[in-house]
Image (cartoon, rainbow, N blue to C red; front, side, top):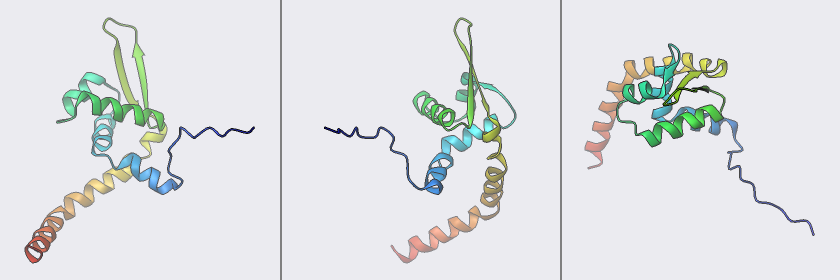
Length: 123
């Protein structure tokens, strides 16, 4: 009898969709901004990223590490020191994120105006 084992991997078959899943998290973007200039300790990331919980930061960093965008280095100190940095692959996302940031700076007021107009018409 040939038993099939269900896949543990729920990856999207669409590469573009998966790429968007990776970079669309607000926590991912904020981690990238913090790591853009080099290594940071976990505790420094936690302090720098306003509103992130320990659970969300840990999940975000694990996913970024799994995706090959962030590397994690553990130093055998007491307590352990853990540093994160962007990998070579992760660094390739800096420029697209900068472009999105520039677009947001240039156009977000227009988005807000459009929302207000829509809400007024559909109230």
